[in-house]
Image 1 (tube, rainbow, N blue to C red):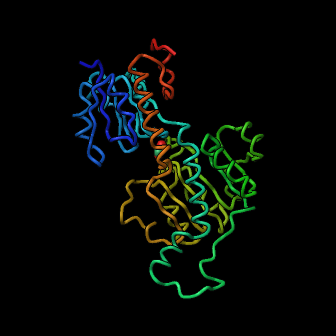
Image 2: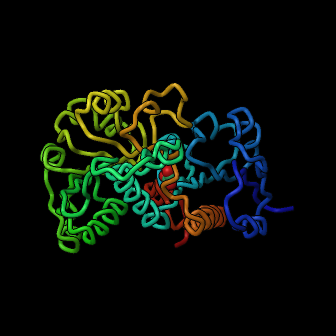
Length: 331
Ligand code: GLV
């Protein structure tokens, strides 16, 4: 009999579970769909560990349903789907998958900057619809990216990777954050400014703040009104960081020029969402970290975190580090 039992809510890419199976009985959802809450509550019974995904709501009730949960390993860098306070109160470790997805997510933010500026998806729809009849000086003209001002909201790992790419486009980069990142300022030649100035002076605004109570609707009507009419906003963090209805109104009334969105207030997107009716947006289904190598690395790290925690070691990416004060874990 294996000592541990782990619920995995969806098959990770790659074969990382093979290692986990050496020490634990793995209860895996083999279907290509998320588990329902009822299925998770049932499946987590008597489990020591849970490997969860961004759409799994992990709250105190779920934690208690296990009866012996020790670790929640989120297969994502964001962990707004987990009630970390409830986990800490119960002595349950929470881990995530930072670093391995930084560059891939920055690539997608850039793909959205470029696609929105140059109207790529709109242009493709035009071509596929058979509407391309001539070369015209005014056909699908967009806006230049090179040499413009990029505003980055949140200068963490992903924000810095987005800023680094801007050097190749010879852009001036402004950023705002609750903390100054002097290392990034020195290395990347970027400038710290308050939020209002970043919004006012940027041609492109890229959002890289985590979702937490203080960042819910961080960008709303007032902030959107501070942006240039020609500006484009890109969000690859979490949907609720931006007030989506305020964004829709700003785009519809052309108070800003465009948006590139990987994340939405409600996912998967509702087909009634009015953003779907706009041409000046590029919309993709939460694929920021979706390169093959990165998704395999995320699965590996989620399993590594799980195995370390089950073995009584400090997991490589422990979120609630305050537990270390009370838990006898080895390094
Ligand atoms: C995905 O959205 C993640 O947080 O890794």
